[in-house]
Image (cartoon, rainbow, N blue to C red; front, side, top):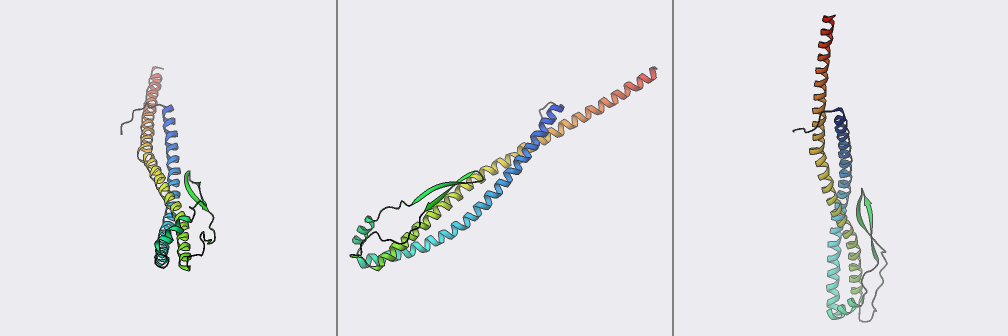
Length: 207
């Protein structure tokens, strides 16, 4: 690596400070990366569990819906479904993990309250309604976790890139500068020492 810097004591101090700053920056980025990776791995395990629960619960809900369609008729079920209001009990907030804003879905998990009358309905409809309500809550959690995993992964990638830049470019560059300046200054000090020694000997002979 070629060093294009004047070998002065002032530049040596600047290079040493820059080297120390770069090393400290790398340490902090490395710690941040490790914390984010641990956080993401925990969320990935949670996401896997939620995905499995969503799959099972959705299958049970769909099976219950098929029973309702057979016993009540598809048209009647569609009419009841349209009368049920859209979900509005959730709120998306943000929390910070090592400077990364990840979503948190807040919602009130209410007890089963049917939005339809009992006329022309049967218990199978209640079962299907309860199952789909459970699926809805699981999807809230899964959406929160999967979005958080994505944001953490993007931040880990960005942090890794910055850490690599310090480790592979900045730190070696400043190390090379420090080494080069130190060697030049040491060589200059040796030359000055021998020159002064020769001058001293010459002065002693002349006396």
